[in-house]
Amino acid sequence: MEKSTVVCPLAEQHLVEVMNRDSSAAEVMDPNDYRMVTVALPYDDDKQSSRLRIGFIDGAWLALPGAAGE
Image (cartoon, rainbow, N blue to C red):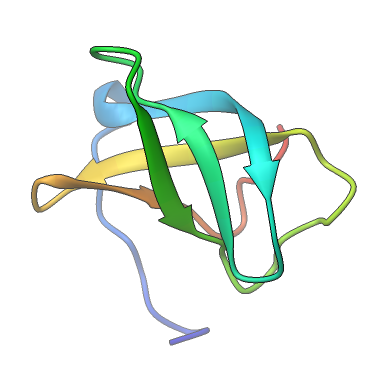
């Protein structure tokens, strides 16, 4: 999983604020309709960062590794 490549157009990626975080997931607001959604944290998650880059892949929001907190 750590060496996988995520393919997602830049237009479908958003830098969002983390509303709530635990050891494996974070709650963020969906950029399209502002509902709360839960995304699994990427393997390289910075626990101190208040932002995540998420992408809309296969009908679901996913946190993108290597791009957290930009």
